Image (cartoon, rainbow, N blue to C red; front, side, top):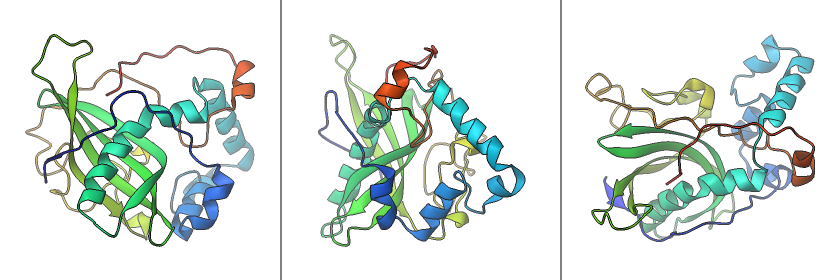
Length: 236
């Protein structure tokens, strides 16, 4: 399962398509999740009034430090590493990255580990699928370079098939509020799984606010927003 991914060094410029352009190629499950604020069963609309939802969305926008493109550029490197791993093992069934969704990170075994969901488009069917990936980064033994180089290692990159409601949104380090869907089975991923959660020593890697997908203001809108600082550490 353990495998290194190559390439994608340096800064990546990235801009995902607009949501309206993606909707026709999303599954009905994904469309329902978008309508219900990330909840597959629609509970958010059932228990919270529409005005409250609008207010929450406005609060998220006021917190945003990045535009949509800046947000996605921050996350896309892990997506590309994961898809490089997947495509190398699925010749004829390759996918191209479409949109980073959410990710969580933690320190484990002296490395930084990530769990992430993202959308990718099938080259053969043009349909968009949700993926889960677990990626971690092995520091280089060369201490003369700063920042210290790292090698990406992808433990798993897999499609999350419909119905999406069958998957859990949390693990030992991913909070349910991040809505990162995890594959079924305690051994499907290494870090934060139920089987080893009591033996694992997971360390939070600082805090870095990641805006939910499609919640960021445009560049013009951001110019009128007050600046909010947040603690963060350099991304891999």
